[in-house]
Length: 494
Ligand code: ATP
Image (cartoon, rainbow, N blue to C red; front, side, top):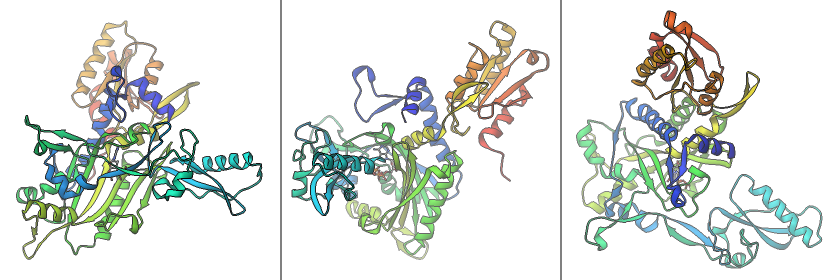
């Protein structure tokens, strides 16, 4: 993770927001390469999930949303996470991410320990348990520590759990709910009616526009409405860089189906489609997983939920949730607005159910970088290379005149660059040894480099170098656009 973050910093993928003022936790600003990568993620999703399907249409709703929307959806009352504070260190923890367990030997409960959620959590707990036994001169194997989230601790247990910050027991407060929505005011008169929220998800905008889309878009159920946009949650503990932030971007789809449709089959299809999509943008299957939510952990209105997970260096975590939400949201908005949100299929009126694939741009961004990061040896030298899929790469190709002190070479290279710029984001680099210039491009995932050399002046050909294999191909400069297009977007399917 540190290598990936250091590369992002060095090459300007993203920065903590407003760094010159000390920034704010949980907010980031994306640099020149980062904003291209994000755009490419959004565009790949939009192309494949919206434009590439006949049964999905797009929508773009306001971020500041009518307050009634959040009362109807239940967010205003209950969109909360539980936290505990350490009274001594003033540290704050999410109560479902702080775990505790008893150190037991021969059935005796000697002490409690606490660890923070993470892939090393069990190992850390075993180490802490060993330290307790050593201190009490009880060497030898103890019983394995059973870890539970602090959210489930009784009052007696809480009094014995040591704070992870100080190790002192009894300094943690009882878990309390923390409302996650960011409030804002609208208009010039400051009263209760002007207070509302920045959306914590894009989905509700889709539900409140359901009838507008049905009336105007000539879609018949089953069909989907998709939206990409920023969402805001005042997360208690933003962490793991872009993984958990307070402002992030979602790509959500509500796929509306009839109440008697085979939702299990449709849900299964979406899970497979979405996994295939991740593979198509270059995230290999062994880094992906499915986390099927247990029935008793589902929201009361949900029928099923499967998360798609990614193996980040800091643990296996959700990148996308695919839920079957029944018709809860439309029914709630119908009730609160007094407007019918029923669908008429020519024979019957009903409130449709939804399957909701909901992904996060920033989590995919981080996953792509983690999956793509590699180091290998090239021409006897170590290089850092981002093996990003060409479709996602921030820069598609670099144009490099072999030397910069031959004006005719530079002019020709600039001409070629200008032609390619009409199609893609490209880089032009004329300074330094050619090998160093290739490395600079490898490090940010540029899949191709076009080198203009002396032969180019004679016969109009250039070399096209491929990032991963470093193989070079000689082609006519005028064939570059179709040749690159096929390599970036894939061949046209019949
Ligand atoms: P978590 O349990 O990790 O908080 P969630 O289940 O609350 O996530 P959803 O409400 O299902 O997340 O949101 C759908 C998607 O939006 C997630 O899969 C994730 O990609 C993205 N997302 C949600 N919260 C954040 C956040 N704080 N920072 C970045 N992305 C987020």
